[in-house]
Amino acid sequence: MVERCFSRLKQFRAIATRFDKLADRYRAGLVLASLIRWLREPAR
Image (cartoon, rainbow, N blue to C red; front, side, top):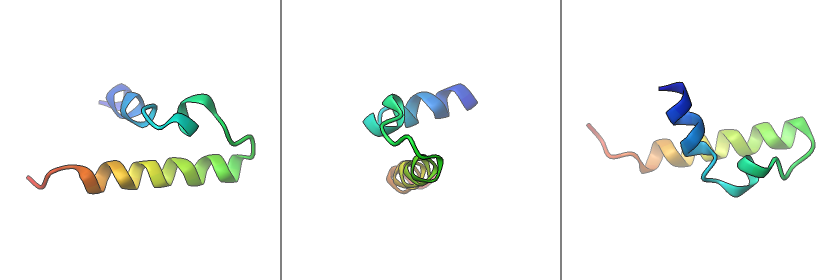
């Protein structure tokens, strides 16, 4: 389940390539990508 989560997050280019070199910005990108994935997920 964890590996699936990482593979889904890597669909975002900035996350996969580590575009932002600063840790704070990279973490903010991860949070935004996670939020987008969570909001797009259909309700169960």
